[in-house]
Length: 218
Image (cartoon, rainbow, N blue to C red):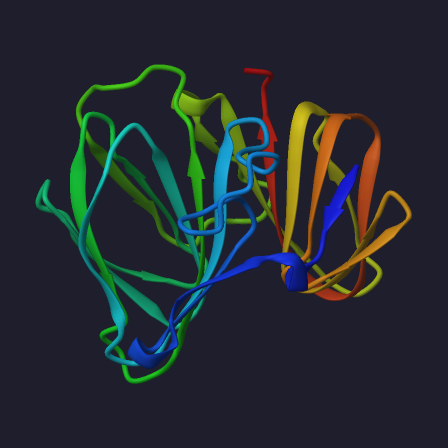
């Protein structure tokens, strides 16, 4: 188990434009050849957008992009004609496939915080696709078959225990609160990369929200 702390993330964004980013993996100017990916996961970015701030239209290709809103509202528009507002508890997925362009903005009056995760598909190309699941329930896994991955959302009360899925690659990201995992205490923004995970439990030290990626071997 490899634990990465919140303060170890690479800083990014544009503070003057109201964008603050923190990257868990090699990203943009912060190139780290030893931290390019874990399993299918290529990026786990924590993004904070001030009201009126956002990312102008930009391209993606050959990437599965999954977004989890922590607080606020995210406006999404893409070149395939989708326009939605993503709120806390929703899972949004954009399959960029052979190529798509999109805009991400905070058009609301309150600050926006979200976690965006990029995964590598098994096969490149294809047609872009978009999906949003409103208010996903605990213990309802969200599958990204194109990347051989499954997202599990866990919301835990203090003292509550949950099993971490067994898997070749398991990535545990703490959105809020605090949990113990394999003898380590993880706080908000911390993550654990577990190879060949087996018989692991996460226990909430205090009320917590956790995103868990279960990924097959490449």
